[in-house]
Length: 113
Length: 117
Image 1 (cartoon, chains in turn blue, yellow):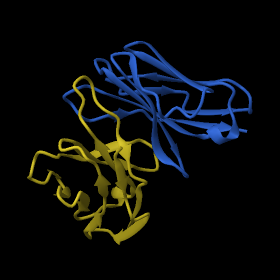
Image 2: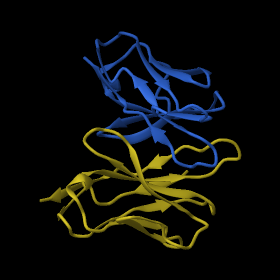
Image 3: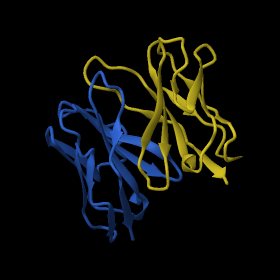
Image 4: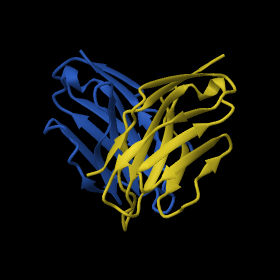
């Protein structure tokens, strides 16, 4: 398996624009997580899904952020409108119950100017 | 809510020496899992080692071992015979189990480890 695949690896956008980050989890994994990493706040969970259903979205900063998982092999994290303070590395991770380990993608470095 | 504390922002050690990274956590759960993740400059998050709270025996993975003190809520990582490739950010993380699927990871703030040649 190719592991968790995130796209794009890097994204530079202007303030106010819509940004969509994409994630393909490892086949067969039933949990998917979106984390954000910043210097100030470290690694923090934004939202996670079990069996495509959102379980905990309390980490989503505000209504500008939304996440979907339309099927077991694809998830998106959307920011609309984007702001400079959204600049961070966004990680997607997936896991399978009984395996414990969460496998992370390479992350998307988002820069909002 | 669970919290994870790493009190050493940065550490450095000579190649081939042993280094210990500290981690403490706070939880009211009795069953949980603890992890150490490594993040090299490539940005990839890599699992180094994990510990199940119900196991008294400390986990080991080659040169990596932990000292798990459940009563003290302490979970330190020892790297023996350190190598240049061990240079990375190291994150301690906590997870409680769920009935279906896995629960989220709560991370510490990380320790930046530099191995000096």
